[in-house]
Image (cartoon, rainbow, N blue to C red):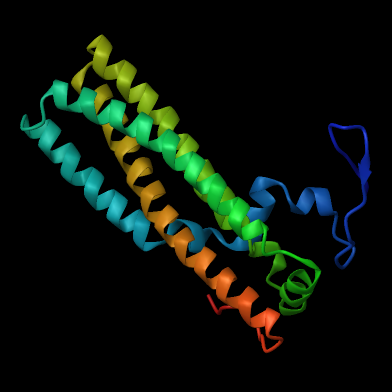
Length: 196
């Protein structure tokens, strides 16, 4: 299938076992191929849920006043926006490793399709964290009811902390790509797909 870009040029991607390239690279198709269990059941999710539980406990117990929730909401928005930029910069670094030889080795190992999806996933979590943090900011500043503020606080905290944890995992991805690429430059690379 040929894909038209915004510049009115046509890009014809390589055919992989008759699979429609455009459809296979949509977000949910790529997430399904990557594996939802590997995306959601992570250490970052566990830490995020524990952290959000602690923050919610403090808020519902009265130890975290509304002024503190407002401060957290503003911090989540600003730090989340900065994290989004960092994730994109990390993606650019890794994408620079992808020359013809490296792509060929990843394709031989069957890992090419999953090599960059982690960046898309973390960017999506970060965008959701920023959006829910904006919702939390609005709820806190307009004086929404305690249950509404608590729900917004729990979701925003979970997504924000999860995005931080997953961004940290991306550092490992960047490191592995750098190591694999340097070994390929020496021509002694062997890439294998990790067992789930």
